Image 1 (spheres, rainbow, N blue to C red):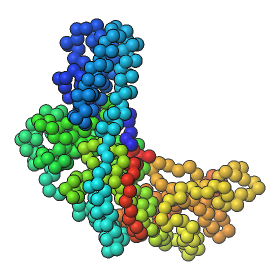
Image 2 (image 1 turned 30 degrees about the vertical axis):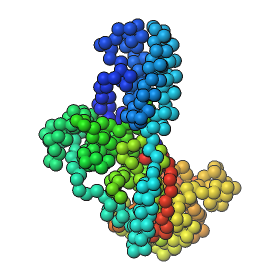
Image 3 (image 1 turned 135 degrees about the vertical axis):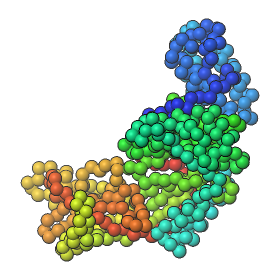
Image 4 (image 1 turned 180 degrees about the vertical axis):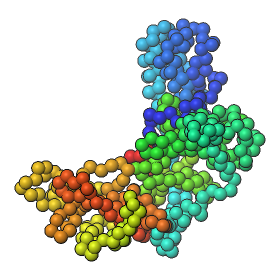
Length: 460
């Protein structure tokens, strides 16, 4: 569910744990041959640190099982010690134990929606459906706006001493407005300043679990081809903020993120809402014709989540007055061209993207002189930054063009409606393809609920 190969919070090191069962080995106290061998070998020390991470996560997730887990870990350590200075034996021992812990980790740390979660999703469905009958264009947005947490939230950002040096942005050195002295002390003790190392970062304090103490939400923009923002949560744990651990392997630190938002190649957003006394990260992942809203427990590893799905139907049209994006000037389409483009839109689905569709037949007739018949079957390969709604033939006079309607994953606004274009090219290679704006007004048709795997927050 998350992109791995990016260490977005690399400066947030593992907290020191006194129990030797639950941490990487303290090499300053290494005395036995096994301990010295591990400390002298980078890979073995990495495995030992991984073991501490996994074990501690299990202890925190399921304290009731701690005695049994502790005894099993001690038994493994006695068996490990028999390897003495044999590095191969130690490597096999660590890998075997980690494989045994992994399913326990997944079971213990993955959140299972309960009856309250199901009731919340049904509440949302009913609310959105009521609003759909009053305003079918924005029922989801209006519902989320009403439920968004507005009180008890303090937000601040990392700071930059030099406006032209983003890489030097750092955690504030002076207590931000709205942060209590107690919270400021805990923030500094937790060393969360590393979250802003690679980009703009915002920090929000809000009570995520209803214990009366404000927890921490860190949103870090990390760029990349998808312009990703990773969102991670920290639980207030006494005098510190403890990262909510989510991935079995501590090296993949972006896996500790609750979710990521892709600003290019997707239409995604998150709202922090409170329903029936429970806080959710309401994560929206959209496509042409549909919004999927996942209700995420902000402090748990997510497997499946209560999901509210809103489906839409569009009324599509080609405006006769088209704006030239390069010059900013307007031009009016002639009647024949406008009629041909309008006719082509009648073959486009009003409810869901069909991608390139059926390629068993050519969109335009293939002449005997065609050098490459394959180019007559679709517009051409797409790009991750837009969604292909449909490919279709467009007849302008006696000339057959291949058209493609594309949208930016159903992105929709009150000002512009649906963001979509119709692009034309001649079947053979055409360096001068033409693009036309499409107007699309949507109406929500139905709202449903389900339990489903969270999809889309890694740009897929």
